[in-house]
Image (cartoon, rainbow, N blue to C red; front, top):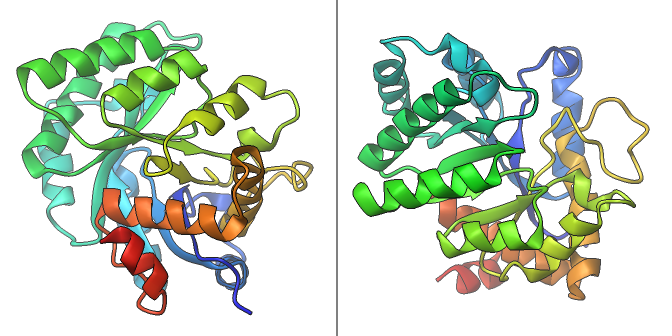
Length: 275
């Protein structure tokens, strides 16, 4: 029997830790039932390497954007560069990862400017955004509400979510999907687990954020990998008190809807739920 189909909505396979054995890593994710992956982008200079990986693995789609911790790399040409790259390949399904990271940050104003510039690109292209938000939920929600009021809504996902239930509601109210990583498997991540319980079934996503944040029972491994998204799914199913198959169909359908990914042809029940 084939494992339940899963989509890992946030990976970084271009990092050095995957250079030596990426073919084996792909075999592992396929054996675990991972049918699609979305490769995030830390900065536009990664784009060619990410595209080369997608050329090797047809189930891989990707994004382009600038991470908030790299906001100081933003130049007068960055917006045009991201716009051009996003339009250069049909496999680019999102802008990001982008956002705010105020943990030990001394460039908050710059981060906000870079974030809003990338929101404009996503709005122009009608692409979803992949949002990184650390110690900045209140300001993030404020900026998004202002953008929504002045420019219009943008689709997207709060990735690797670790916010409180109250903060979770802020972004659900803005129409966002909420993606949970291996953090949800950690024993002391109680507020994340509470958030995982309350997200509506049509807004939940799962991810590894590999090579970071290996989930329990693989937490001792320094390198996370896409196959381990199954442990995230198992924990989410347990928290939400639904069968793993149900959670898999929900999250896979949601990812296909948000990122406009092709549904697996062999999964008619999934196609029906996506219609």
